[in-house]
Length: 82
Image (cartoon, rainbow, N blue to C red; front, side, top):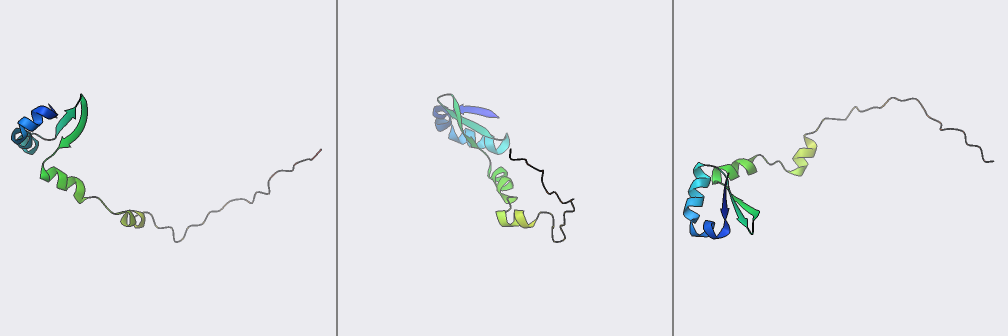
């Protein structure tokens, strides 16, 4: 992944875009800290296409219609109040 300073990325935006399309994600930093990543539209669509909504995620889990737990009854322990 290539790294660009903001000033350089601004001056060479066309090159940043071309590299993102052909070479993969391009990181842009400001004041030495990574701030954004430029990716191709194909990569973006691949990332967002398989994002299920929360309802589908919950409904896609294991079925628990016949869920029973068998355990021995526990009556606790005896406590003395002396």
